[in-house]
Image (cartoon, rainbow, N blue to C red; front, side, top):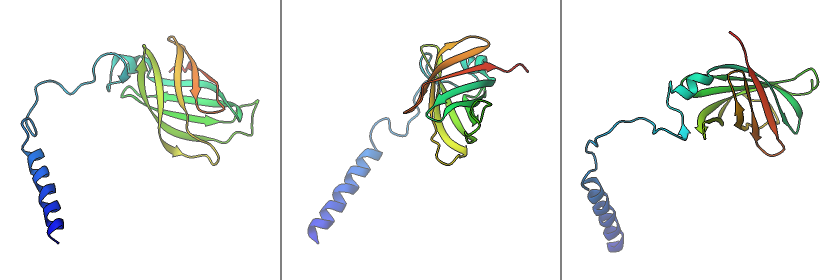
Length: 155
């Protein structure tokens, strides 16, 4: 019993010391914004605002060519919607949420959560390798996948 009390007092002492360390709980000067450069895009950043909108095309994975609508919000979120295309009607439909970041000036899309899951399908990530005002192409990052290509839909 004595050893058990000693351990509890040791843990309590460590917790109390951590709570009173200099700088803990104090205000630190600076701003809570994303640093410029690579990494997650800040809400309303010039990068995400520039690519915001609806992009439509296809991507290729083990199931073959698949329809893709990528809807990008200025706040740095996106929706990846997939569906059958004329050349591959056996594809299921589904939708998942993605987070947008930038690497070397090009967008990357990271899976977040299913919105409308499709049985037997997995979420994927995307890394753009080419981007202009009208077209985005790149790599689908998942086993058995290769490329995607989408065009900006005119509003």
